[in-house]
Amino acid sequence: MSSYSEINNLGLLHRLRSLGAVNTFFFAAVRISTITAFGVVLITGAAVGQSANNDKERFIGSWTLVSLTSGEGANQTLPYGPNPRGTMMVDANGRFPIAVVRSDLPKFTSNNRMSGAPEENKAVVQGSIAYWGTYSIDEATHVLTVNIEGSSFPNFTDGTQTRILSFDGDEVTYFNPTPSMGGSAKVTYRRAK
Image 1 (cartoon, rainbow, N blue to C red):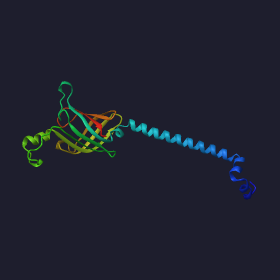
Image 2: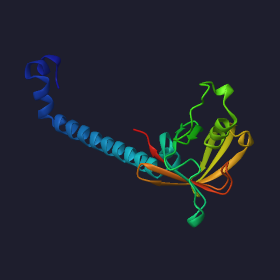
Image 3: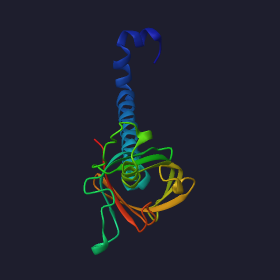
Image 4: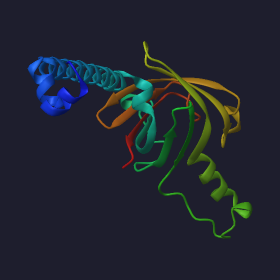
C-alpha cells in the first residue's frame, strides 16, 4: 500500500481482497467460531449429562406423595391410609420440609384445633407427620442423610436419619429404616407439575 489515497481510490475491500487478506481473515474467523461453538456444545453437554446422573440435582424440586407403605410382604401396611396426601420440597441449598397426612382425617367437631376431642387428637397425631431440616446425599451410595431441625413428632427433632434413594422417571422413592411408626417405610413421590 503506497498511500492513503491509493487505498481510498481502489477501495479498501478490493485492495485487501487482492492481497488475500479477506479470505485468510474470513477463514480464520470461521475456524475460531466453529471451535468456540463446538467447545460450548461440549461444555453444555457435559453439564447436562452431569445433572442427569447427579442424585442431588434430580432430587431438587417440589414433590407430591404417591404412596407410603410400612413393612414388607404380608406384613405391609398403609399407615396413612390408601390415599395419603403429602408434599416434599427440596432446595439446592440443602434444605427440605416434608408433610404427610391421611386423606380421611376427621374434622374437629369444635372447629378449633386447640379444643379437639381425645379421639380427634389421636387421629391427627397418628394420621400425620411433618418435619424439616437439612439434607445431604452421598452420590456413590445414593444415601440421603437428613438432619431434622423440627417435627410434629418431637422424638425426631434434632436427630439424624438416613434413607436410600432411587429414581424412576419423574418419581423418587426412598427406603426409610427409621420411620415414626416403627419398622421400615417405603415412600414414593412424583415431581409436582
